[in-house]
Length: 188
Image (cartoon, rainbow, N blue to C red):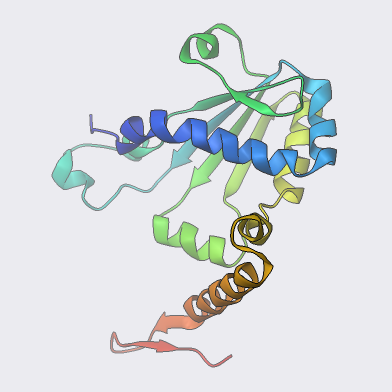
């Protein structure tokens, strides 16, 4: 079995990702109101992938895509309408109210889709009411990075950074390798 880099990064990154998720949910009072009827319910997030990193055969011969997928995560809905990262002990005792299975593709495909504003495929299994709420959250919540930057550096610098980022995004979306292996840009 391969050494999963996510098993090393996960314990450090998951609490911060839960804080980011709560920040996004807390910025939208409607989202918090939709979550409050589900207090105490759990949501398991699992990942599936058919992608095996190119260096996996070199690092760990015989490894599969499951060896390289992130570990499952369990979130519990709090009375405030936010999420709390469940401990490993609590995760094994209580069955999940909802299971979200995120289908991961190759990193470059996920990056391209993210630049185009697409999300990865997600399968939802479990309680219908909680599934409806989770679906609404995935469709309607967005992280307003510009607003958060404006709190730190002011409105004008955050707008400049947004326009530079948008220009870079457009340039990356237009770029594609041409015949003969030379990179080039598509005409808009």
